[in-house]
Image 1 (cartoon, rainbow, N blue to C red):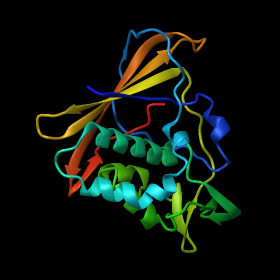
Image 2 (tube, one colour; image 1 turned 90 degrees about the vertical axis):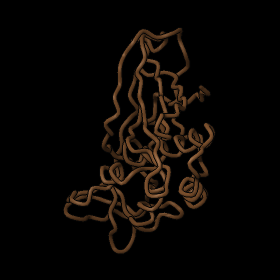
Image 3 (tube, rainbow, N blue to C red; image 1 turned 120 degrees about the vertical axis):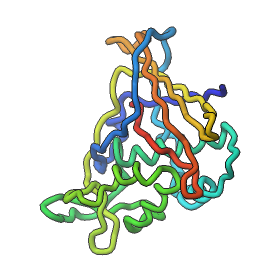
Image 4 (cartoon, rainbow, N blue to C red; image 1 turned 60 degrees about the horizontal axis):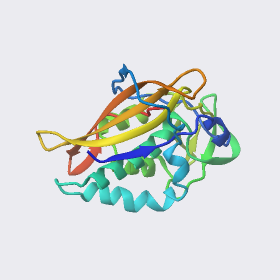
Length: 225
């Protein structure tokens, strides 16, 4: 299997710009087992993709139009984009600014991100990465205080956020082809000791990647940090 290494800065709080909020996690499983030698702290893939706005149209289209046969690079690239998008809900929300807007007693600010002017813009982009079940968890329609909301015809977000989980080191992702023609991205994350220097075990995650309604999407997802 071809592997790709990912890294997450354990001090993600330094990246927060005052417009981040906690989100929901998906239902992928995690197990612990003895691990190898020490490794470097992982860094958020989002931090390495400052030009995501330009990918809003191109990446969504390329994922949607992919045929039944995909390469490992295509799948791992889709995983990278999925991590970045999921961070907008479970780590650091989309950039925002302007004056505070109060809606149903909750403070919001206008999203300042090219291509995302309304909630529909955000939902369309997510449909190029996730199944409808995952999107329903990220954008619940019955939430009285949603993370993202259209207010005055503009996409707004609740300021807030969380830090990345401590005690985690390097992460490696590998693609597995399933008998039914679908794929699975298997991610292994090193667990560090209290000194954050030695690997004491691992956590393993599996994310199904299937073709649904003409699009290749992740049918289950969460952040591993």
